[in-house]
Each structure stands twice: as C-alpha cells, then as structure tokens.
Image (cartoon, rainbow, N blue to C red; front, side, top):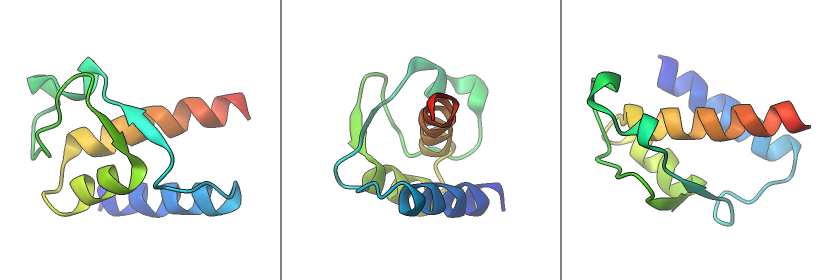
Length: 82
C-alpha cells in the first residue's frame, strides 16, 4: 500500500510541476541499497542513474523498496527547495 501511495504522490507532483519522467535522472544513493532496508528489491546499485520512469517500473513490478526510497529522497528534497 505504501508503494502505491508513493507512486500516486510522485505522479501528482510531476503533473503539478509539469515534469517529464523520462528526462529526470536520479542517482541512486548508498542508503537506498543497504541490506538494512530489507524487503523486496529492484536490485539497484549505488551510483546507478535511472529515469523516474525506470524507477517507477522498478518500484511497482518487482516491488522494489530501493526504487521507492530513491524517489522519496529525491522528491522529498526537491519539495523542500520549492
């Protein structure tokens, strides 16, 4: 349920600020790839660079906690700046 809500919030933010999910590239942080995160994973690696579209697939299809956390960090920091 949390990943579905994360998906919806990210889509709404991108729509509101007219962002293209194929043009925004997010660098994966080490904190998103640590075993402590646990659960299912999209097998992301530190310093990978993926578009929001790719991360949305990684979050929903294999139910990747690492993809969800990477986008939560990115969009959370972005909203602090707006």
